[in-house]
Amino acid sequence: MRKLLLLLIVTSPLAAESIPAQQVMTPEEKKSIGYDKLSSEEKRAFDQWVATWTLHVLEQSSSYRPGQNLSSWIQSWPSHANPTKTELTQDEINQRIQSNQMVDRVRTNGEFIDLRDGSTWHISPFFRYLTQNWQKGQTVEVQPGTNQMHPWLLHNISRGEVAEADMVSGPSPTGKRPDESPEHYVGAIAVQSATPQGDLLSLADGTQWKVAPTDQFKVKNWNPSDRIRVEASENFLYKYKFTNLDTGETALGNPRK
Image 1 (spheres, one colour):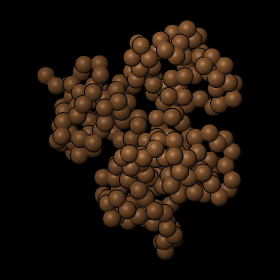
Image 2 (spheres, rainbow, N blue to C red):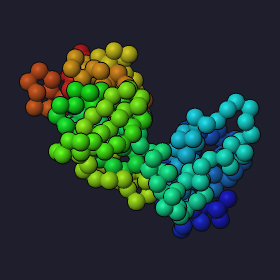
Image 3 (cartoon, rainbow, N blue to C red):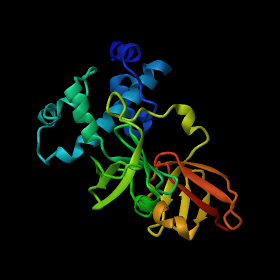
Image 4 (cartoon, rainbow, N blue to C red):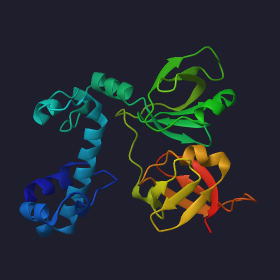
């Protein structure tokens, strides 16, 4: 175990995110693998590996069938998703890009769409009334269009909608959006819950917020553990702005009295 973690630290690019062992392991499980005997650096490597592996499994979860042998299921993953592979061929990169053409963030009320493949798209003003409602995880197909100013079409297969766009940046060389640096999340507070209507937002620090009616359609889809930055707004009626650092969306609100 110790040698494996040292190898991870030396040879593997660690994820920016981690899952603390105490959130996923019982004291007995930690004791059985000698977790508490590890150095702080080795614990960090293990926690980050757990997070990375969890993301791998989530990305492939739709292909799993009840009763399927887990080892056989992992071996059936496409080559670009092989968790132990460190170098990809160009064909595998292209496959990863295509498989990661999914919404990662909707920014500035639909003006910008970030896809999981690392690309960013600037949406034509005539289509932002559609894209402001797009959600993280929805599947998008990119096709060439005929509008010279916005020469691409983003077809949101999940919603059956199409938006004209121009490319701000193409897919990343690996076909996946790079992890945000830890500094990006400094000062963020996790979501505890949001009401089904999106009118009330509860954060992990115990605060509760009444959400502006125009933003409730976004907040109702915010997930527990999404990281929120709270800051003063310039709005006369709603004094605070919430930025969801995991979806890129913003909302206005006031403290619940």
